[in-house]
Amino acid sequence: MIIYYIIITKPQNPKPNLPPPYDPFSKKPTIQEPSDPTNLQEVFHSMRSEGLTNSAIKMFDALSKDGRTHEAMALFAVIKDKGTMPDVVAHTAVIEAYANVRSFERMLASGVEPNVYTYGVLIKGLARDGRVGEARKFLAEMTGKGMRPNAGVCVEVFEACVREEKVGEGRAILEEMKGRGFAPDEKEVRQLLGKRGKMFRGVMGLIFGK
Picture 1 (cartoon, rainbow, N blue to C red):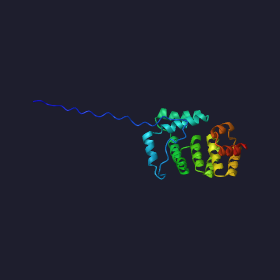
Picture 2: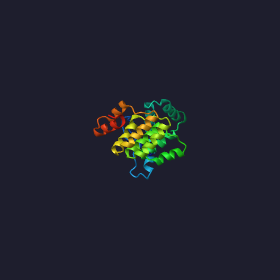
Picture 3: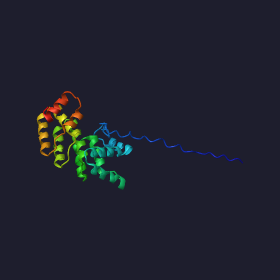
Picture 4: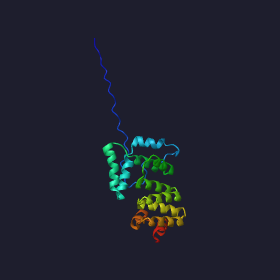
């Protein structure tokens, strides 16, 4: 009697689809805005499939560049020592995806304190949407806490003022910032604006009178 054995081998796991490497010069948000802004499922899917590592790296990078190295290292320690992602990273990722005030308010209601990067993400998102009044409110809140807005935040806000023809409000925002000791750096603003023609002249004229 001959017995035949059939050996069944399991197929090897396909190579996982890894997210692209982090690019610190990219302006593309880590998590894309969903096609349906009332549906959070797309955001959560991105978090599950790609993780929050890119969001964390962007935050650490920005905090370090803004001279807040100790704050960046404290967040990194949470990941390294506890093996968990800091709540501020997850909340900021959602704020970046939606750039709305409600997500920010939910963050506060959860007892999570926003950092300078969180404020920057929110303010720039509001400014890009032309919501100068709201951007001004959170810029004042940010500087009121002693957090210095970097050149990127300043450029977005004052570009919005020029674009929306709210130069008067832009001057008021500038005076509020100076009153708290946070004057925009001309060299950094020039570098970010590049040669944007009318927008360059408008923003430089608004901030520096040039």
